[in-house]
Length: 143
Image 1 (cartoon, helix red, strand yellow):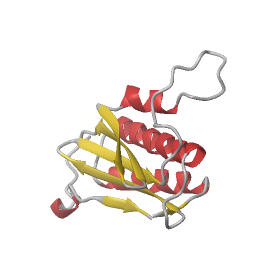
Image 2 (tube, rainbow, N blue to C red; image 1 turned 90 degrees about the vertical axis):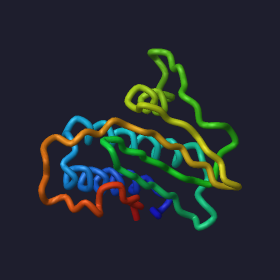
Image 3 (tube, rainbow, N blue to C red; image 1 turned 60 degrees about the horizontal axis):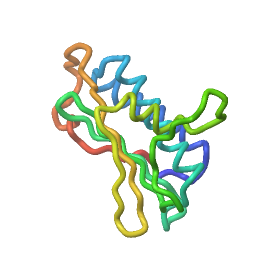
């Protein structure tokens, strides 16, 4: 769990980057994943309510060279969707970026909780003997 605050975006970016680098994920895939978690959290903070706890949740799960990133919040008045902004638009590109970088993405609802998720291709750059097998495929919660 993270505070429902803009500072949580940087915290999640740093933690995700550290996990993926420790797991030996290819650097370009790390950059894409960090951008995706940043966009998902920024969208949740801008458009949605916090969870009942007053916080927001970000998780990631890496297995079989794919990474699933999720951000859960207290929902919003509108359904998250990729926008089609004009060149002069000041915003509306976040989920379009996610859509471009992800293999697939979507939204799921569980009561008052809305979770936006994205799956990215995240191959290993080199075999990293320091990665413990138990860590691979383990769901990580940021917070």
